Length: 174
Image (cartoon, rainbow, N blue to C red; front, top):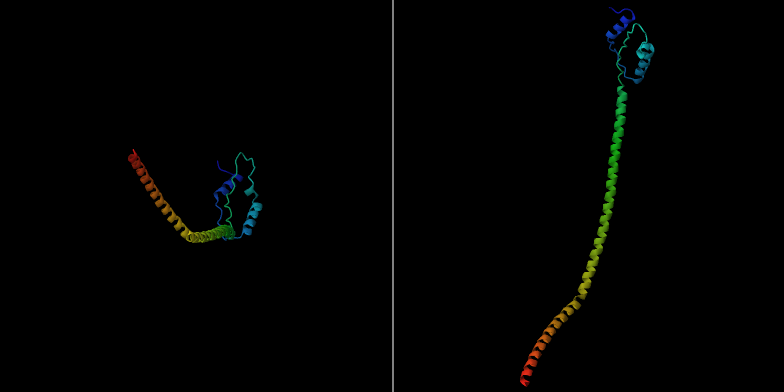
């Protein structure tokens, strides 16, 4: 059974490949105009046929989507790359600001530590001077301590000797 009339025309439109474009137009306006012309010139391209011709559906011609404008894509890419690089540079600047603040704080802490160490050094020198001024008195204390120790030993010996005399004197009188 061969197709006739509208069915044959529909079958022919399915089998035919679209002709390649002879000139390339890369502007977005031309593509938009072309898309609106296609929609107005061929209403069947947008709407399916509702013919009830014995239950046979007609096929629509498949069209390739229009290629996006290269210039637009490049601009979009450069815009996005600009935003990305701006973000990266902002993050890097923030990192450097943070490092700068940390460096300032560290410098302040080291200055405080330097002041503390200078104060400690000054206090240590003062203590050394005071110790040096007290040294003669400390020497006298050590000398007195030695004399007290010698006196204790002499008193111990005297006590021991007097005990021996006390024991011997009791024997003599008995």
